[in-house]
Image (cartoon, rainbow over all chains, first blue to last red; front, side):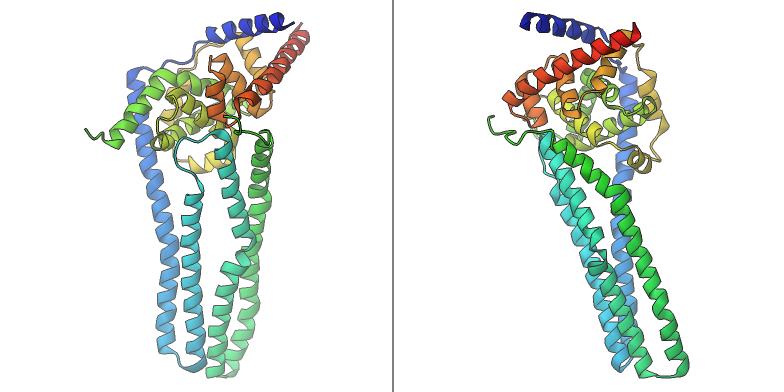
Length: 213
Length: 172
């Protein structure tokens, strides 16, 4: 029986060896090298500018509301200060999550299992971030914004400012609910299925993997 | 003498393509979800090899390392993400790769079809064994222990024979 299996495998191996894998001429290799080099530079540049853009928006908002805080008085100033703190806090949280995401991936020659586990850890971290977007992103900004608007109304309690405040509340609520919904949709449609497929790959490894070598 | 890391990376990349292009081609063929995904997966594999080359520390052979990169890229590859991330990728890259695809023997095509029906991990092991890798190399690349590699391969081979046999019956 063993002999039969070995013979079958030998036949398959011979068949496998008969296939002619593509042979890349030197000129093609050089042109590919040029392409990947260009692509890699462009990709790194786009990641760098994305990080700068996201951080800059938070810092610009913080600078703008700092200016507002200086020009306001009393409760409005206190509210604007809360908003500045929220903008800075959210920007720091953004930078920290990017830093943390990069640290999850191990350096060096790693085996399939470790790489898949690292990918799963990254995806789970993203899921955790998006699931809690209300607490670390939306709430601080909403609270800061409301504190500033409320402080402004208290400082000049005219009818138009009160009406404006009342009208802007549902708009803020709707925008923030929409952002939260988008994040939850991303978890449902993209991240959760991805985590499940990574988990099913990890499940293909026995528990004892790596213990006897 | 200090070696310029960029030069080293480029030299290794050339070696990957010059001596081990077959690994990429075989993994793409065994893991692509649909025939039309071949080109995109090919691109992704080439780019991933370039991106991860600085992490290669020579703890294993370049070919064993390439199997690892190719398998995990293929296993985690998603068409949508690839389209999104690589939207502006140069078309010439995929064109030059697919233009070199050789004619395939129908028996080899049937073998690939059977391999594609194996569980992902078994697919990786079967390809490596068909390419003549040792259990140690397979263990290093996948993270399984050598004894697990043996046990898994034995089951995978049985399943592969069974799949090939049933395909033969269907075609006859």
